[in-house]
Length: 423
Image (cartoon, rainbow, N blue to C red):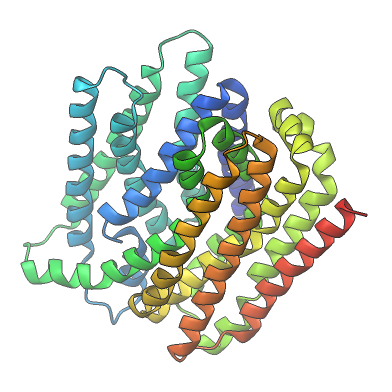
């Protein structure tokens, strides 16, 4: 019981740090700079998945599943080498760029930081060190907040953002190097192939899921403008509060999700989408009280774009459900086969979303652009989740109760929100 209480306290502190660092940053800096940082993080998440070759996602299989032959020291070595190359690219860009906060500097630097952060957060979760894992997952945005605060307080130029992020990435790299040297064995090319055989399918399916979720900010940043992106990002971050429920349940159950018998998993995993639905409902009921907590900018943006915010809020159930399906794909080792279905869906839907964004942005009405985008992105998220479920089912695994719970929770929230707003 004491250990559980300590976990809840640690989780609460870490999640508050993660959440409020984003909210405070949005209130400290301009909407344009915040939009730039959000776009950097969104692109870096995708780059970390691709360039990282799915190595962080393979950690639970390597450490918890005895039948997997991939070596842990080989994974550490490969991840460390990739991070070093990314930091080198960022340093070269910083020396040759006129603007230290250009995307050419920030994106490889953020990619290295997120790759290493994701690796070690997953290791900690796999080893049952949940409190340390959630604390580490807050590291990127807490570091960025520190840089933003120093800028506002007059300590330095915007280059301070790059400096604090570089220090954070370097510390994670040193942690990785030390861990590798503690367990290293003679390197064998066959071991490298085995690690990549396990990790690459996870990279592909993870990339597709991130594209479905993060495509919102990437498409807005590319086909709209930073002001619209900044407003959307504020709503996106604030309405993500219910995902605390997802994180709490996932992190608490993480080792068991890979060790439970499949029949037991089918029954007990239902608590995750239902829990997120309850958290989303609670957020909606209390949202008018959050202005003082989340800051004036959130309160102002939420009031101006309330219906859009509620559409994004209802998506939290789908975000949770998509992430849970990814864990199932990893455990069942069917990620590569599911990826074909997900890729086909995104190949059709993402260009449509980009086209709609361009068309809705022509009249210069920010509110209309946000609303139109939120509706179409909700449709994309729902379609992607249904595609995941169909692909898993066609590969011989039926999690019917879990899938219906997620879809029911999403539909109930959407109907309730819209009914109350328009009546």
